Image 1 (cartoon, rainbow, N blue to C red):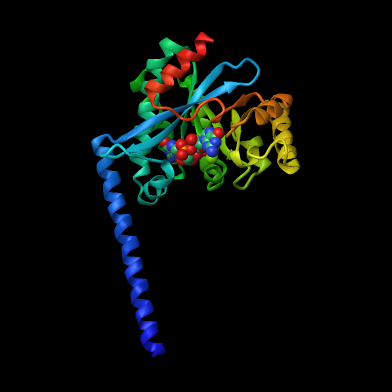
Image 2: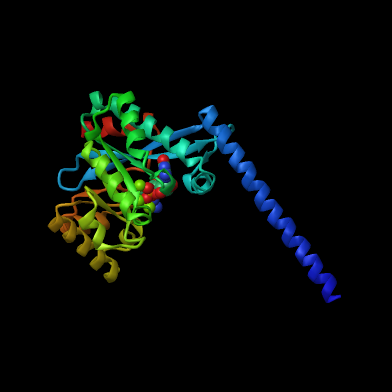
Length: 278
Ligand code: C2E
Ligand code: MG
Ligand code: MG
Ligand code: MG
């Protein structure tokens, strides 16, 4: 009996594994097709100067618009794109599209900084050339591009990180540490890598000013950034209370739903126009 049950359990387990593999393969195939069919779009979320309220730039965030119009968020496909290596082609599309868009917006909204997320698989010796080619084809000034890279990506191979970041920043591109505080936070790389800014992860911003630990962490990171001459962006700002606290710390830049969710290009333009009017 027990043996039979064990066998049945193993059967079910294998069947479940099959399903996981099959659906992952299906997703991989669909992602490849989606890229060919141009189903990936970028949404843009503004970054704001806390002192003046001016928009300093925007972050490009990829979405997959399926046939039926449903929008798939990045957490549902970026991990698979990373595992299969498709992220390299997808990431290049994102880079090119963001550069093209910023070039088009520059005449209308001025010199704003376009931030693009770079995943670990894209962080390779060829990245500076890929970025240079995207900039050149779009006709965009490298000074208007910023790459957001996580701590985890930067810590994988220190020699590679130093050489890639040096080539990027020599070309005038800015580099931000994304999700700061969630990886292997090390003060070493603040001193070693050419970093222009740090983005304090949303998880530390969520419970300020009430959570004393988070309030202390955010206070410390903001003052460290100031002392090192590095820009600080607080991510995930949703409330007036969070904003007031960040303002009291003189945190230079903020980003979050309080100002705007990531918006498709037309809605982002309308948001910008509306803001310029007030
Ligand atoms: P991230 O780069 O840290 O982006 C911030 C995420 O937080 C975005 O989610 C954004 O919509 C969300 N967010 C911003 N403000 C708020 C807020 O006030 N409250 C809350 N609850 N959320 C807020 P999204 O767009 O779903 O992206 C998630 C992650 O997917 C990104 O995290 C990034 O790691 C990755 N991702 C997005 N686009 C790309 C891309 O083009 N390439 C790569 N490699 N990764 C991307
Ligand atoms: Mg980011
Ligand atoms: Mg982030
Ligand atoms: Mg994040």
